Image (tube, rainbow, N blue to C red; front, side):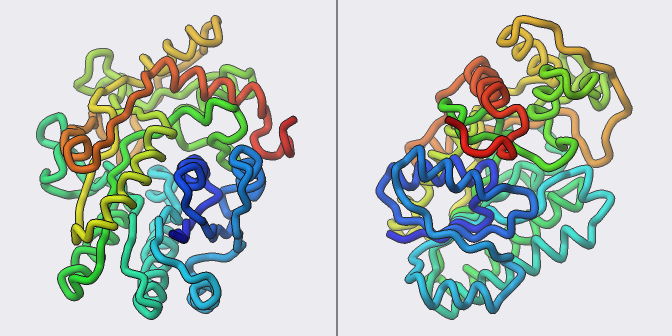
Length: 341
C-alpha cells in the first residue's frame, strides 16, 4: 500500500516513517520544511535502507497536491502537517487557522477527487480542554482552551461531517498526548526551530548548557508538586499506533477515535528529575507565570486503543529520557549537524 504522509519530515512523522517502511508500506512525503528538515528524510532512508519519495510542498497549495495525487497512486493518507505550538497559537491565531484548516480542506478535496478515502488524522489531547475528571476517555465532552486546540477540534468536526455525508470514508482520529524521546539509534529526534516550545527539547538545551534554566510554567496547579501533569509517551510507541490505525482502516470501520498515551501522568518536575538521573547532574529551573491556554492535568484512558487496535505504549519514562538525551548528544545542533556517521 502506498501512503501519503503530510508533514512527513517532522518529529512524530519521521518516526512513523521508520515504522511504515519497516511494516512494508511505500510512502510519499509532503512537507514544506517550515519547521522541519529534509535531513530527517535522509536519515530515515539510511535507517531503513529504503527510498522515500519526497515533495517539498505545502498542503495549502492545492495544485501541487493535485499533481502529487495524479502521479503517485496514493491509497491512504496520514495527515501530520500543521502548526503546533500552544503558546504561539495564542499570539498568532489567524496563521494557525489559515494553515491548519485551509490546508486540511485542500487535502480533503484532492483526496475526494482521486477517490482516496482512508485517512489517519493527527489530532491532540487539547480537544478535551479542561477535563472534568481523569483519566480521559474518548467520549469526554470536547472543548478547547487555545487556538491550536481549536484547529484540531474544527478539523475533527470537519471529518465527522465528511463521514456523515459520505460513508465510504474510513477515518481514524488519533488524539496524541505528549510525545517525547527519540529513535534509540539517535539518528532522528525532535528538532524545533529556535527556542523550543515543547518541554523536553527545552530541558535538553538546558542540560547541554545552551540555555540557563528551564522555565516551569506555574507551581500552583492542583497536582502533587504544583506543576503541570501530562501523559508523556515515547514517540516510537506513538508511531506504532499509526500502523495499527492504518490496519484498522483496512477493515472499513467508518470513523473511529483513539487516545494514544500511556495512561500515566508525570509532572514537569518529574520529567526534569528523571532526566537528571540520566545525565547525572542537576538541571536548573525557575518557576515562572502560568502559560496562556495551559491546563493543570491531562492523561489518557487508553483502554479503547488496546482493545480495538491491539496497541499499547510499552516504553517507560526512563527510556524516553535516555533516548532523548542520546539524540541530543549525537546531534547537539539537531539536523544542522548534517548526516551523522
